[in-house]
Amino acid sequence: MTEPQIELHGIQKHYGAFHALRDVSLTVPAGRFVALVGPSGCGKSTLLRVLAGLETIAAGRIRIAGRDVTHLPPRLRDLAMVFQSYALYPHLTVEQNLTYALRLRGVPRAECRRRAEEIAAITGLQSLLGRYPRELSGGQRQRVAMGRAIIREPRAFLFDEPLSNLDAALRVQMRSEIRKLHDRLGATSVYVTHDQIEAMTMADTVVVMRAGRIEQEGPPLALYDRPANRFVAGFIGSPAMNFLPGEIAPDGRHVRLALPGDPVLALGSRRLDAGRQVTVGLRPEHLVPAEDGSGQMTLSVALVEQTGSASMLVTATDPALTVAVARRLDLRPGDPIRLSVDPSCIHLFDSVTEQALS
Ligand code: ATP
Image (cartoon, rainbow, N blue to C red; front, top):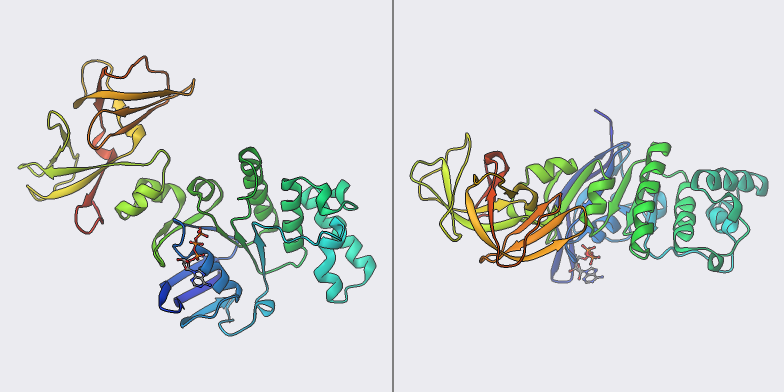
């Protein structure tokens, strides 16, 4: 087990009467890339700012590399923050922006130059050192912001939605650049984003937050395959998981769905109390069009979207189900479609507590 680089324990944060963080604990091992995700206002930026020392807390402890920093100001925490607004100095060149913090610390000019060149090589800015921020693209500015964080050789990087000002194609490119940089530097990173795809593709560990609490943390695919509750199940995955009411059948081994024809799905090896009311979760790609007249339910198609390589359709049911198929389907609104579901792909949640049932 790698030593923990960042430890947050029992963090409570209030803004006046508003309780922004509720007993949040999180451990980030050295070298790990952790993404904090959750809907707007769930507290992920607040948690990052608390870690950076930019916000005071009502209770809790923060340790970085084994040292208690709970009461230390930001500059003594040895962390570097990268924001969505790059906050570059417009009147300074790329090189001067990169070395600003070093020059403040009195690092000699020649050493600053050497470090700037080293960082420029890592971030792909070699030919741009003499340019001003206004002469750079969005992606290049983001790289300067990264470079400026790297040059300080911090204990960990904190990213607050660093890509949200970039267009879609550049975001995808910068995602992998940031992750590669993290690996190359052997860094520890905490990355805030509201974009679950960004979190899933970049992070070793995804932390899902809601209303100031951590709902679940784990490797991206573990969260996808085994969400702890309905909220995480609905937040992780795009298109989102379908949810519908169900009732456990008298044999305890099947679930009856609230859909036309009252379809019944086998639950595999699981056994639950007969008559129990549940919420059934079905991922769009787990609703599989049945080829040969098999399948467990016949539903009517309301909408078909073709992307060329894949099809997405929505059923004319209440609730409507989204079905994602990785090929073309020759279907039109009003057509019937027969669907099957593998028992191992059925998610069940308690209809009151919304916790996953295994
Ligand atoms: P977003 O994705 O929209 O940035 P977030 O999850 O990062 O959301 P935070 O910025 O951490 O959310 O804010 C958490 C909650 O705390 C929000 O409800 C917000 O309105 C509130 N909040 C944040 N900063 C302050 C402040 N300075 N004063 C009062 N309330 C605040």
